[in-house]
Image 1 (cartoon, each protein chain N blue to C red):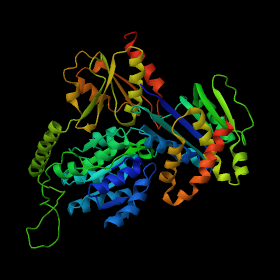
Image 2 (image 1 turned 90 degrees about the vertical axis):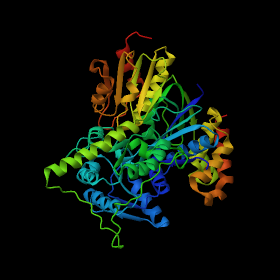
Image 3 (image 1 turned 60 degrees about the horizontal axis):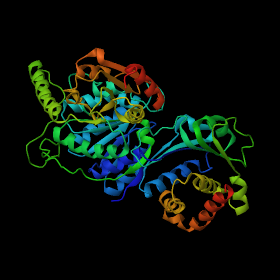
Length: 352
Length: 181
């Protein structure tokens, strides 16, 4: 298929339908409104159902129901809307169901702004609902990656029976880039949904339960969940290394911020600085493996559209908190390449 | 590293500012280049203002955002001129819709082209052609893509049903090109 120019939000819909998603539940919020708008037009054409719910809380619980019935389904929102969905996300995680949640982040806290931001790292990567649980979090840096990740998110969610969050920002949602909608080259072998609530078909009754009044029983649920999370942590660490071969300094950045950093790396390389970038493709599990065998890196320079929510993970991954410096802009402000270059030069001093 | 065009377009809604950017983007894609198109959205657009940032490059595009580093800025009305003159980087080019903008920029470190697109469009009998005339002027000087690719992009952006409008748009691009050289 030839490449077509697609807006990020529309690309989410095309990718989800390609992945077999047939149900969408959502409530409008800028900057992701093209997702529900486009779904409302496209889902009926493929025999699916679009529901504009009465609230974000309703939408996430409709999703809970749809995935419990074994359907491929998703919801999307932007920061304050995703905050409202947290309770439901916790329930779906506890019930071990495969849901896909897209967050086109905007400036916060509170109702915030509607401009692009990355300040939901803590909420989505560290998990904003109650209890011990984990969500797989994917961080696309361009529209093609967004497409590929959305398609894979449905497979991953089914494979691990776990929610998968696509953590992008308003710019990815609004921007147009050339994309190709295609299935992943390597398909996972999908487990059958033997647990799905499929109605009275004469088989064994299935139950999806969220409450365990027995403490020992609930502890066992937690232990089993964390056995699954350990497998995901082992199998799914993903990252890109950019110009890291001879690098003495390394940026760490994800999503749209990493694109500005990529331009900054190119400029700094032109001036002779030995600098590269580690770009996490998944934020949970965090790609700790990317930091192994890199004791020679003098400083890690974390750049985000936030006040530094990923810094803790970078410090843990490189195992030396003194090596980590941070530059970020918040509230929806996007740093320029020059700002990032200036920050890096201050960190690196005269080192070239 | 190859050439990267960073094109910033601004004006008010209805002037075809967003579609100008999309036409350049699609034409760039058809030419096998890397492209990005970023719109303004939200409160920036209230009051009818519109702008978009386009990157067309031989290489993978890093930052898609234009922040005072445009190689080309196209400003279609006075409000855009007052707000975005500084979007052009030194040595870059500024294209002004001189039908509406009668002032001259204060900067001396950029190339400035005055294109009376509304007047030319009125002469052609269709004011909607103003953005295509500007596109022709910009592409003549900057040589971003082949003019024919802009017309091929036309049906991609506006749909096959508008294919009957290609001849008049071809003429508009030619008039724009002629107006700057």
